[in-house]
Length: 164
Image 1 (cartoon, rainbow, N blue to C red):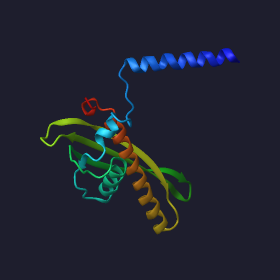
Image 2: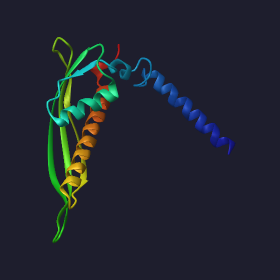
Image 3: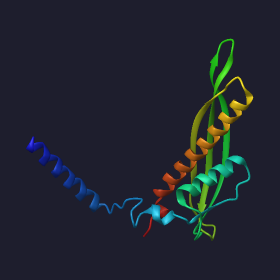
Image 4: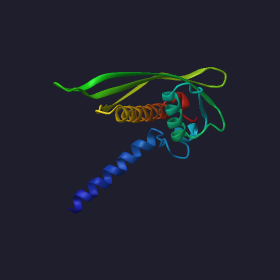
């Protein structure tokens, strides 16, 4: 019993030495990329419902831009496909897929990062139109939050945005 505790202690010490050797810094630490991005990204003005939801989710994660160091140009594409079908009843579930193409640039317009993130979710179709519409709106909100989460995770590890 005592020997196994010693092994885990030695392994943890070895792992710490390896991490220290590669200049690892936590993303959300004092010198991490997370602090570098907080309150510094200004997204393009939203024009659609999904744009508003995406920008709100992005600002929820990174804060409202106070010192605008970066601009974010983006475009969102939504698609819906049927997911579940019951014979004699019809569709019972739809899948909502979203794709976000983005370009992050500095104020001079120099591109620092670009790419594509995608997410998907599903919602139930019910016998009432109002319940189906509400379920779709909720699914759209969920998928916009997923896109914001994916984008923030991608930007946090972007080499061009790492603090020096």
